[in-house]
Length: 104
Image 1 (cartoon, rainbow, N blue to C red):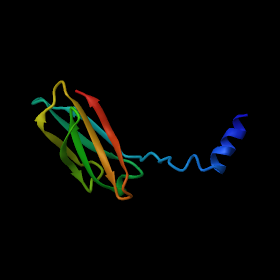
Image 2 (image 1 turned 180 degrees about the horizontal axis):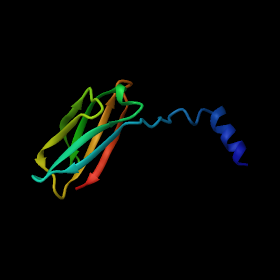
Image 3 (image 1 turned 90 degrees about the vertical axis):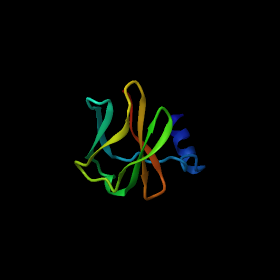
């Protein structure tokens, strides 16, 4: 039964909208002034990232990394204690993906 469903999905093109997950690693923490600080750790898809924007409490602020490289660090221009911060990667194939998502 399950095998028939899988075959039918491929035959009828039901898997055509699936998007592959990108592999980019970023770590983040908060410094003594309450600003978030991020470090690019690497990943197989790092070379295909055009830029990375950051959001605070679902408001997109702007670019935090452009042409990111391993070991590069950058921080937010505002204190983020008690706020929800996301980093969104924009890739050269037109896709975008959340790379970091944390409540500070």
